[in-house]
Length: 343
Image (cartoon, rainbow, N blue to C red):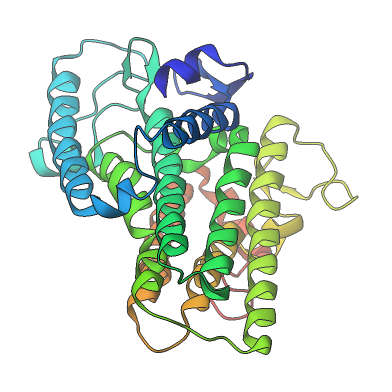
């Protein structure tokens, strides 16, 4: 996948300006790389070199191996960061003296191997792995003659979500994870283990549980997915466009900006973290095809809800420190954190 990412065509997107005045540049060709990977795997399956249900059949082994890799690699990252003498923002080590804290959150912003930005590479790998797991689950469902509307809905939502991610991959370059979070165990584990193996819980559950959904539930599920997607993609796209061109119209009108940097128009005038609202709605849409018999398929949206509330609190603290009085004024203009008129 790294070779495909390096050689396949794609736009070169400038990242956010770092504290030392430099910036990273990202080759956004994830969609091309994903298509190449699926085509190669399809050829291998047609030639009977691998089974389409290989991931489902070896799920526990793949999970344990990926977890072990994440643990070892995050230790290597910590050690390499401690030995770094770089002064630039990307590779300068930031240590607190607390080994567990520094290993968990990381000490370098953009560590690289052979010119590959590991943070950008790992999140791309996690999204691709999620889709591959789902395709293997789908193949198993077809093989067992258990394919139903619930599995079709879940697979469709996830496939659209992953394809959308890679279609708008350049928007990822302006997200908080890329521009502010250092690469430690939290992100390595989150990208390589949590995303593919946790986000696919609903598919694994549907393999072993038959669900019959009434027509009204199917329609409601589709509506929630569409609303969630509209809010999630719309908010992220508006923020990305604003960072590239602060004067670009938002919903056909000049953007309202607080302090020259804080967007208070469009979705960002509705709630300070409106993208999180879209993400939560999408997570519930992924789980609703499983019905209400078990809480297990809802682990992901429940976890995501808790995670995003925690992250929103961290974001608010950082923004308060960074923007000071401008942030106070922004909060007055946009009082709602995630859920309009609720929170």
